[in-house]
Picture 1: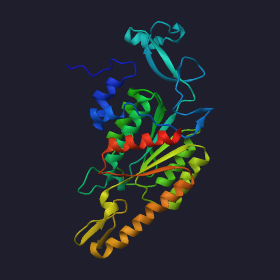
Picture 2 (picture 1 turned 180 degrees about the vertical axis):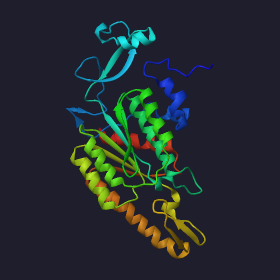
Picture 3 (picture 1 turned 90 degrees about the vertical axis):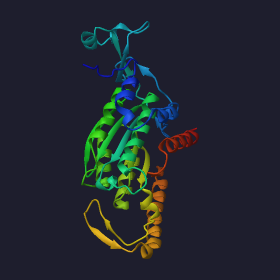
Picture 4 (picture 1 turned 180 degrees about the horizontal axis):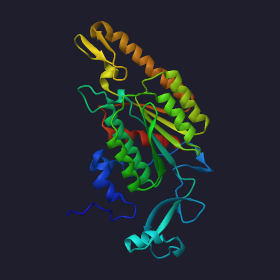
Length: 316
């Protein structure tokens, strides 16, 4: 009988690489991301969130993970239940409340299942983006959680800090294909109602819905003093509309079809799509929300690295 892969490191990164994140990121991509950090532009209890990290060992902080007992550790923090199971001494690590909490709000509505001839589906690319952000967050000793949603929040994973936790979180993405429902504005309101403490909310979606309703939901998150990043994930065909011959368009969410002549439609389509993007850009800029369009044909590691380095410069 083969043994299940296990971690030899204190934070469980070996488990993650062997079992979970390899489904989304390869070792070369993880290597490029290893020294990056996701900073909040706002303070939490007097400290720049994500810039101040201090694992503690006391009841005033939240439990984060275990580590092997070593010289200098307080014996009163030994977890005797773990010792009984493993015959080894481990102490509980706690995370200071000033650490950054990041929630990935990932859209799995039907339209996210779309792909053209280039690249993966929008949902596949969004999952890889979520994995990259989660990896950066945990590597920097911050906490990551998940809201996976369609017409409602389907999966919620509370924020925590360990590679094993991230591994389990990512398994939900692997088990949850795009749904038939859609309702991003309603789910953002649901998220706003459930996250009481200030956090960084990373919204990953194609934002195909009522722009005004979505903007209202984003405004609620900002009113609650959450930092918000929006990664609008789109297929190049949606943006460029380079169809060459008459075809029938199919709505993944409503099932409706429409026969079109691309030559007659292309110019008006691109103009309308540019207006769609610009409306979001202006709306989010007015709320001080970071907004980026992510194309599914973009190299993911290069995009994430460039974005995080830019955000770090702006956070100084």
